Length: 197
Image 1: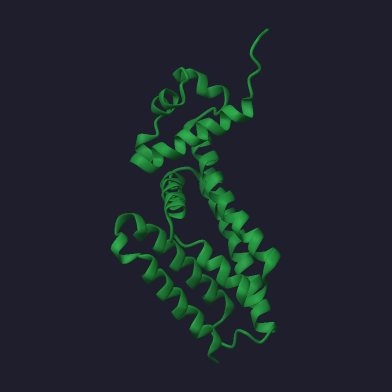
Image 2 (image 1 turned 180 degrees about the horizontal axis):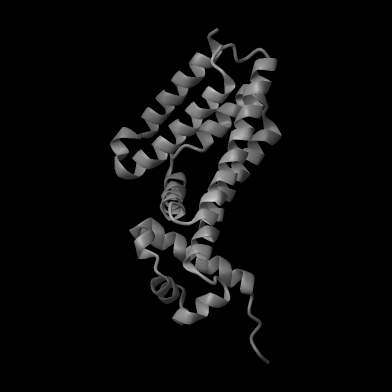
């Protein structure tokens, strides 16, 4: 009897391998040849699951995004306003190995998106969604009397995005400038300002 092949499982395995190669050696290490070899496939066999390297990197990026989106969904189900904003901000910072790893995959995607409009648009779509969550919780925090600063909401959202992006980059290229303690200090300072008129 012929063996039943679970194609979804194989796709996940290929993404696992790509994730590991990007983490260990960056985007340049994740060639289709290396991915195929590490996954136990003939080089051309990957095309059945992913027609191009871009498609494979996007699937790997989707995994990094889904980690963040699951965290946001869990946060918004159990918190609102300032508590939700805090949980989203602290949860998306590279404060443990898993999130530093996700940041490395994200950095590889940023690099590839510079020369690929479709991937670039995909990231902008994610950024728009993330920013809308932040706006929603800042607005709720003001309505609940927890946020008093006169700083405009757009500026607060910009600060959160830049703190997060900077922390992710520095955790990879200059980790002593992005320790868990420093990340918490930056976020604590940001949230202290929210409470002041």
